[in-house]
Image: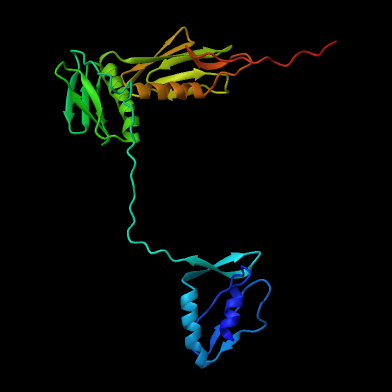
Length: 277
């Protein structure tokens, strides 16, 4: 009797949950139609037969999942698949060599290079700089005296670091030997700049002048009260200081007033048209 009801429970693609417990044994229906009005209590003599039949029919693992259609909880049968071993296949990433990274870096005669592991020190007439390379790249010196940055491994990050650190190394060599400069232009009535000691003073239409301390490794020169020249051997510091000057009064698109780079092109906008008569 219990076996017939158990078989009918699975008929018609109905999902159910079978819970085994010590006496008394209960079979509860959790389906949407409430198949059994009350739990069925199996007798002691039918317990072994029910257990053997359930173990032969159900080679599946029951997991409780929530579903709006099947009720709060429903027994979803998940097949048991024996897993002997799990292996992961790692795909080799083939990266092309950077066009910038593979170029050699010529070293002038007035520049001294010192290499210690992943550290590089460059000393020239304008100053001294150092750089630490990541493990993905390494720097070697060729017989001709030029530096060459190479990848130490074939990964995507190594390909990214290759061109970046080649450019940083070249900026160091050029910076300590020749130097860099950045030019800015002040556009506007009454806009002017002056150098007072170690400060750059800007008059940009505010109620007070703007004073900016000049870093020790940079030189600032003002021409015709409206042209600012920032020079030094560290290209990143030059760009950062020039950007901080421009930030006080960025050029606006209608009249072009503000602080702009000398080679910057400001896209102009057309103002409001006058009222038609």
